[in-house]
Image 1 (cartoon, rainbow, N blue to C red):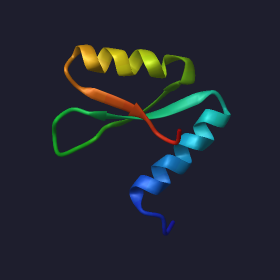
Image 2: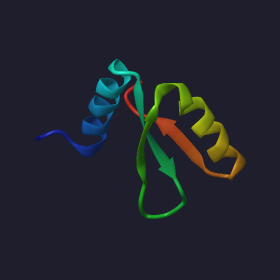
Image 3: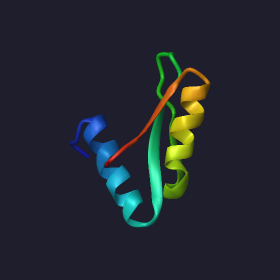
Image 4: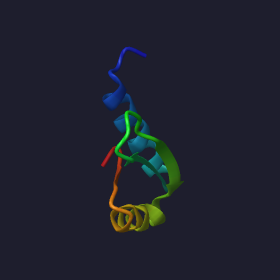
Length: 62
């Protein structure tokens, strides 16, 4: 693939959304950004839980 990483992950997130899933990235205040796959219905819950922990999470491909 010749896409930059951010564009590739956004495209994956759009595809996941089409099948009822979500792709999200967690900002854990480190040099890495874990990417997780979960049911689309849980994406808002993940964002809220990350916020309660003082971190951020956002869905990709929206």
